[in-house]
Image (tube, rainbow, N blue to C red; front, side, top):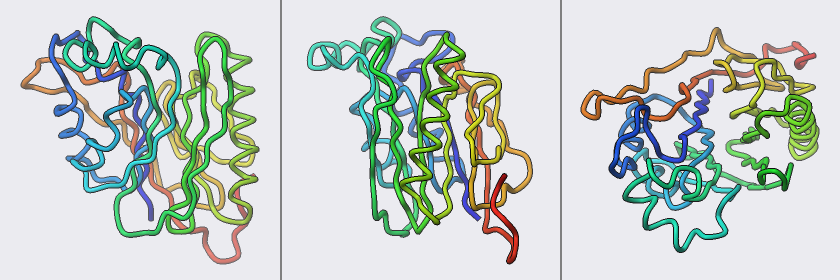
Length: 235
């Protein structure tokens, strides 16, 4: 059984805004949950290795949008994420816990405008895990990106099982060839060649010390396991 977490980190911000660096708070929350692979979106580009270290994991990153001025904006974003917001730069990250070998890491650009959107994936322990953040405020564009991502991930995985998840930016996500393992509003996990195990959990993300919620998205934790012998893959 593999446990998959997906979470949009809101560029390292809290709700309501907290005028201080929040990397440590996000790292502590991630470290406290039980998961094997974490699919993260809207991650400050300098965070993935730090998050991985806190969680006992390995990090794999794909840069996304608004990184043109990163050398200038990082200093402000690191101190006041509430001020610089998404202009601090963005990345998607996959964190992998455990000793399973990671044998591949691939990226595909799904869109360049109005924002750069990327599918990236790793193969860990013989299972492919894909992560994406689809385009916002355009249902047709988001659905097209999900279809493209599913097609490409199936091509990368071949006969191997695969999981795909992230911020789909649609309330009715569909990844052809994959079955839903659960989600919350825009954030979902789907699987192919694996059996989804029960309902996904929507995790609390309130930090009592800050008096705020980390991110404007709820983390989703799903689980999937091997198909029973003789069972077919998802329709």
